[in-house]
Image (cartoon, rainbow, N blue to C red; front, top):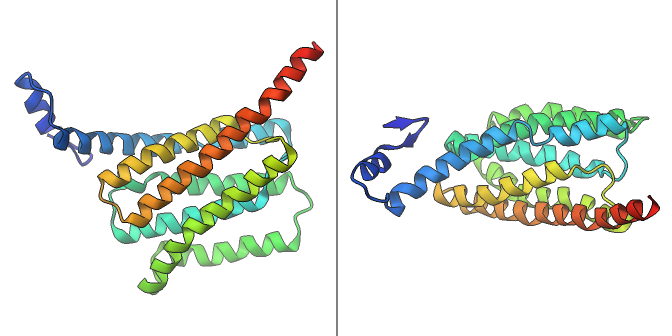
Amino acid sequence: MEIFGMDFSCVLTSLRHGQVPEKNCLLPLISKLLGYCIVAASTTVKIPQILKILEHKSVRGLSLAAFELEVIGYTISLAYCLHKGLPFSAFGEYAFLLVQAIILVSVIYYFSQPVGAGRWMRALLFCGIAPTILAGKIDPTLFEALYASQHAIFLCARLPQIWKNFSNKSTGELSFLTCFMNFGGSMVRVFTSMQENAPSSVVMGSVLGAVTNGTLLSQIIIYQKPRARKEKKDE
């Protein structure tokens, strides 16, 4: 019995005989299920951040460079996974995250008026190059080098925001829910990438994502506590 690439036969057979499914039967199924859960959750992961900006009409404390680099990182990751022919459950979230990341950057641009010529140039350059990368119409060696560099891109995407939070001792309009979902998704993706026998570079990217997203989540928890206590004291 196979549904969406998930084989339930060995699990159902074991349960019919009153036995606990073996690890080599259960783990691949769990990996697939978690993979599809991540893909489903990724359709809304950045919406809390977008809504928070729209609600407050402010991008206070947000690093524009961090979100722009995220768009580049998601583009490279999606293109590489498509090029390698990995199952959709192993990378599907990148497609949804890329769309949401582009919308998020657009919202930040809108509330960061005036938009300078440099930002327009970056946006136009991305629109010109992204289709070629997603189609995989570049030299394979260059593609591998590009994907290897995306780990550094994602690291650089998180560091400006982490540093800005540290400098301001505040996370501004950064959304707790979005950071929490990013962290949870990264942790699960480490497991699914290893279970799906993804390239080591893919696994390393997931580990790096878990560390940096965990740092951002920790900053939100740490820097919001003093403010909550102060407000309580004022009351």
